[in-house]
View 1 (cartoon, rainbow, N blue to C red):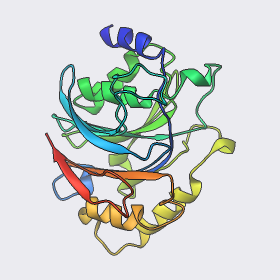
View 2: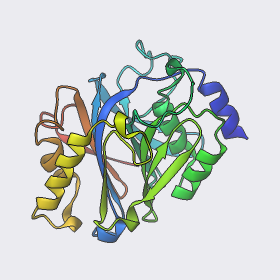
View 3: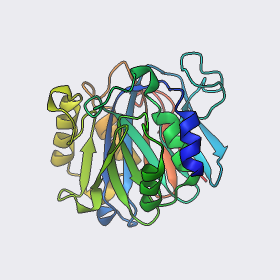
Length: 268
């Protein structure tokens, strides 16, 4: 009930949406330490980003933020309300998202949407496992005011993508993927095919991963940033703002364009 009440108030506002992103989760069955690896290449209208630590309601967390989030001059949420665009908490639970444009199936006004940043901050505050996250989804007041793919991994080796809109969600368990990984950009499997975006980046990422000579067990932060983020269009574009990789208890991030900015490790 506490979570539901929180969102009934919170979702009176909305945040800056990300334009587009490319992501991959590698199953824990194929990594050296039995922990899933999660990668996100972020495209956004906000190019000035930072990584910050927070004390959440239940857990400490570290996340990627827009540097001006405390004043948020462009976002219609209260100044100082935290939002993260990918992060990890002290239990090893991590989350990121890619925007979608094919899932919305209702008349909720667009100005009430785009709450993914505050949604992810809240998940990081209170979730330890995929099961916690699914309970979180089930108990939110509707409409949830998000339209996105959410990638989630946990310390126990759990790894999944969730297609989420205002009223429902669908899960894809990465540990059941025949390839050992799942690629997600800006469309969903359950949404409208005529509204799919990011198909070119989806195809290019699959081609890169299928043709690499690097064993999957060595697909770490350096591999993803070098072999995906920095490979040029359509993945690397002027709207690209950063890249992040979650490996076990380490959060790697570039605080700027991946081909121009060093990748730094953050831990809790």
